[in-house]
Length: 239
Image (cartoon, rainbow, N blue to C red):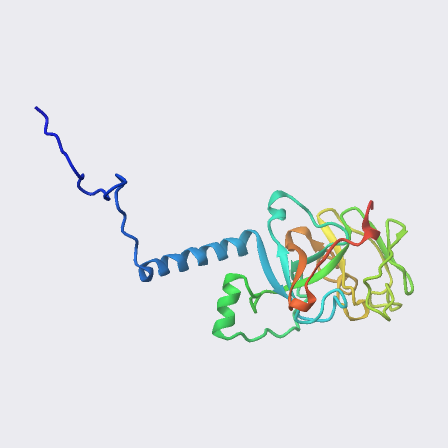
């Protein structure tokens, strides 16, 4: 005859018939939570969103020196290409930043950079606005306006007092056709931006390879008083 157990079963809590489970002490859980948080931060930085700091005034007044922007790194993984009017972060295509000093970071700043909260000091990245993409004809004559495929751009984002084009021989006058797989970029502070116009003698003739684009800057996240989105201006619609 089989044994019959009556009363309370061993290993079960009284009254509800469920096994008790001892909670792990917080001091043992903490290191696990920290590791999980670090892994998530690295995944987000690598594949989704990363913060970048604005190092110069070349995108004023859209972006100010010291602004922190969030950059969408996810959509390029799905084949999305840079579009006209977008503000993009891209890797230095051919020593555009050769004369720029590398800022010093303390240990805390390096940790934040590793996690993607701050940009790394040794990252040679730039931020500009996409004016034209592969197959477009973009031109400047005199003080402007900029023309893309023969149509003048309405650019209210250009820095007050600047002209859309610069009447100089170094890069202010041009008419180029953007090769496939390339983009043409310009800063919003036109007279303070060493952009595609002034690098036409480099190996890419001033164009930026699409593969160098890290992602699109879509929001100003810091300082709080500067928070705002970075939409594509209406002048680029339907081009």
